[in-house]
Amino acid sequence: MKTYKDLENDYNKSRLVSKGVKLPRESSQKGQTLLYLYQNIGQIVDKPTAEKHIAERLGQQPKDLQSLRHLGKQDGYNILQCGAIHGGRKLKRGEYVLLNLVEVNPYYDFRRRDEENLNFESVKR
Image (cartoon, rainbow, N blue to C red; front, side, top):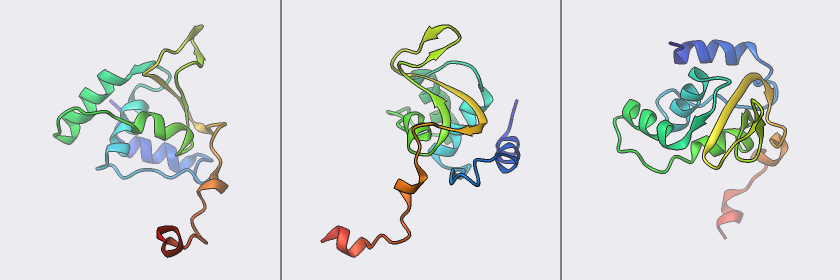
C-alpha cells in the first residue's frame, strides 16, 4: 500500500510545486484525504467510503468530508468530480477520481489565492 512518504516523493518530483499547489500535512484531514485518493489513484472513490476510512485513520467519528471537493478546484489537485466523464461514464454526485500528480486541476487559479498583499485587519473591518 502506498504511504504518505510515497505521496510526498511523487509530489516533490511533480510540477505541482512550481504551480503553487501545496501538499497538506500528513496529520490533517486534507492530508489523509489526499493520501486516500492517492492510494486509489485512477479509481472512482465515493464520499461515504472515503469518510469512513479517513475518520478511522484520524480516530474520529465520520463526518461530512469537504476535503474531497476542495482538493481539486481550491487546492489544485487533478481530481474529477460530479459530472465529469471517467472510464466511459459520468461521475455521480459524491464520486471523485484523482487522475495524477502531474497536471494541475484546470479550474485552479493560484493567482486567486495569493494572500501576500492581503491585509487581514481591513478584511475584518
